[in-house]
Image (cartoon, rainbow, N blue to C red; front, side, top):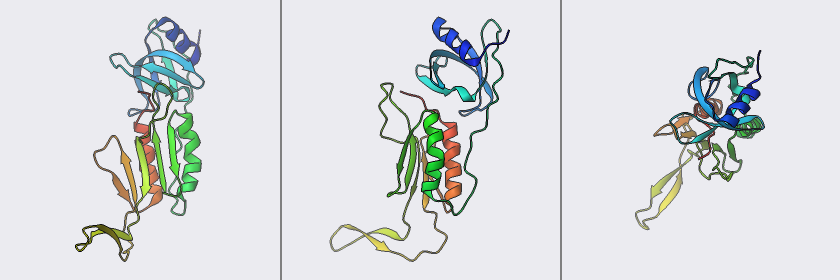
Length: 206
């Protein structure tokens, strides 16, 4: 007898059982991992991994299979790959934000987007449901036509214009997984890197 993914997760959550899932997401897509489901809400399951104190939110769409301790398995779930933007040098940040925001919200992320500041980022939520103010991964435009320079007469820092060379890398991506950010000349490559970093992170609540 075959069971659905949701049926087995609900049963495990009710009884406090550990199940093994194949999850096409996180830092090791497609790998088997044990979880203890806490509750199923909408298209996601709140769960914790044995030995770890924090709950995680996992998308049901990305769970390929659930196997219980007594050997029962769910019907296989055809998991579609996460869509990442194809390189398009003429694409604007607004277009990328419009394309990516619904997907990241569906996956449990809080999305930041400020078109005036050319800023796009994703962050987590507290267990209370309140959004954190800091980003886990972010992308921002930095104007390379101005450089901060010390005015020796006043002691103040002023912004001076400089001639661009065409080799500037104005798109900066910061990730909590890396000590330093990475800069890109091309917006599409910057968003590809951002998407990779988001996929390697987890939209867990703390």
